[in-house]
Image 1 (cartoon, rainbow, N blue to C red):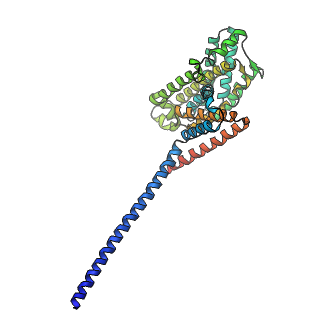
Image 2: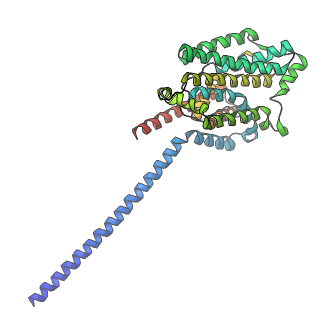
Image 3: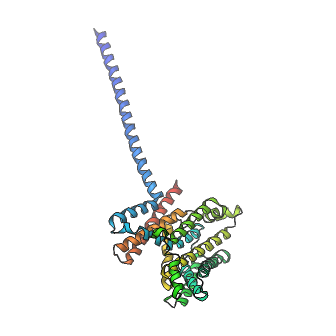
Length: 363
């Protein structure tokens, strides 16, 4: 009898152990599943955050476009205006982006464009030839860029100081010829200037104006050059690691010099667009263009330190700036608010860029 009791107790004890083991195993599996789900959720959240940080300019662009389209009256009817204005002022930002990629800056881009407009008008008036005026306007921009490039790369003056000084020089020349007003060719030549470029719309669509087509070709060409040629790659090397580039036999000063020349050439092209759009060279045409260009580049994703950024980044930045400007104008807000919002957005993007850069270094 006692043996039967002991055998029964042993069986109950063994069954209890088996049940406990099974319970522990099931609990462990549930716990592991819960931890895995939490990790997956955390991983998803981190992936979303990293995406927003990595593609912040594209996210901002999409958000602004959706907001303006649905909440700003008549904005959807002004898509063509956004694209057209982006082509006129975008040339300056595209040119500046080349300089910024090499790790430099140019604060004279606004009045390089204004000076280009002055040369277009003055040469056209003196010679009666609009094509010659356009060629000279482009050449004037390239010369301005070459002067900045020489001072920075050959003389060795800080690009910030050098281009502040050249900005005052170009500004003085513009003010001298315009007499703090405007200059324009007379009669049929002025009409030809006004109708030559900015008023030529393919198929009658403003979004397909000749200025838009020209800028699209320029943007595509530069994107190919920067991505697929040694000439373009040298720009990135100059901004990312100039010392390593020198050791590899790359002429870093020459790359930086040509970046300034191309920047000046594109500013000259912007000057041609400005003169054509208004039919005149106006002394205020250079005001604030440098700030617009820098903001468009940085908001779009061009790094201030150099070495990073694409033409797509610049395009997104230009469109963001024009959406803000056009949208707020349609909302009948004072122009000061446009500057305020643009400044806040610029700071936000710089903070995001700083945070992501620190995390990348820590990783």
